[in-house]
Amino acid sequence: MDTVKETVMGFSNRLRHRKDHAEGERTGGLFYEVMLKYYQMLDQAREEGKPIVWAGGIPTEIFYAMDLVPFFPEFHCMVVATQADPAPYLDASAGYGLPVEICSVHRVMTGMDLMQQLPTPDLVAYQSYVCDSGFKFYDSRQEYHQCPSYLMDTPYGRDANSMKYYAHELEGFVAFLEEHTGQKLDRDRLEEIMKLSQEAYQYFYEIGELRKATPTPLQAREAFRNFSVYGTLLGRPEAVEYFRTQRDETKARVERGQGAVSQENYRLAWLYVPPNYALSVFDWMEVEYGATIPMDIFNYLADIEWDISKPIDTLTQKMIHNVLFRECGGEVENATQEASRMVKDYKMDGAIYFTQIGCKQGCGILRRLKDVLQGEIGVPLLIIDGDVVDPSIMPVEELKTKIEEFFELLEE
Image 1 (tube, rainbow, N blue to C red):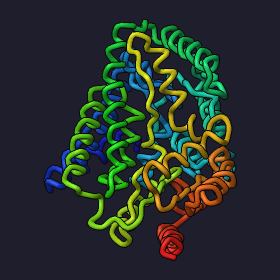
Image 2: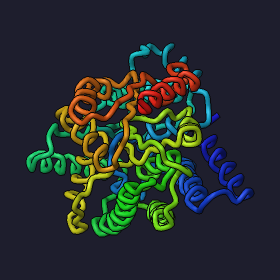
Image 3: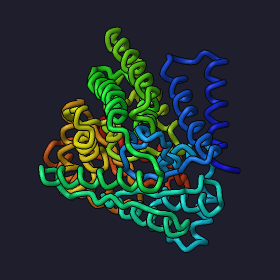
């Protein structure tokens, strides 16, 4: 079955269940509402014959300003991982010739594509940054579907020349979309979209600041959902409503002194991907150990300057300081400095790095990260060799065992 339609059905069922049982605060149900809206927009665009653009690491605002609905394969994979067994897709990609050393996210998405369970791309747009596996994934899908593609060359640094270069690449991407969709970018419309983007971004940033409170107010499962909204809907009013609602609810919890758990015993930094197939592990940590995740890298926004009158320059700032650029791009010090700042700002007792075993850049920083956190700062670091979507790499019970051993270390 088409995984987009399956996802529409899945979010519809979860939203209905949420409403029938009146569970929790507004944000929980609102997450299902806004993600359902995104997938309905995507499905409708496909039904109406609008161009489908597969996008990897491309600013959402440009698409929405041009009345396009982008499809983000990596985000879609994370959603599917919470609803379905990835094994058939991994088998299909293995039969296609992809080795197990490649990131499971891109193997799963290749398998879905081969099994004709994804929207067929009319255009493919992707970045040269950070992820070698992602770079080759989009390249191979473009070749497979024989459709036009745009590769955005991402600079290594963050200085003024790098910013200027990236802005030029964004302008080139706009020209690419205009050429192949027949639509011109309305710059006034882009400014309107940027206002919505800034508002949502600011609420999201404020949520991160509120999570510094002791006890921290947000449960890990709630927080990990946020990046799906951020990655697919920034620039849309749905994202503004979602993050404003969560900001208000989080602020109210802090004012009441209400924490994510009844008694907070451990504050842990989560420094890489979550196990999307086992998000219940975070609930278990909170209930059994009083362990919270006050911050993780996917919620750790940079405090950037916004100039709506210069949308391309502002998008450049936002993208260069986005999580993958900040944490895994450029010099290794980028990752160690961000992790150190997070641990200190949020008064963490320890840190967990759940690896993506096919992620060369993520695994490549581990030794230096351990030296800095444990050797220089004195914060214990647990490294777990896992996988973001494939449960066979790190089964749930084995994952719990490793975390239990880490809590024993923290108690010493």
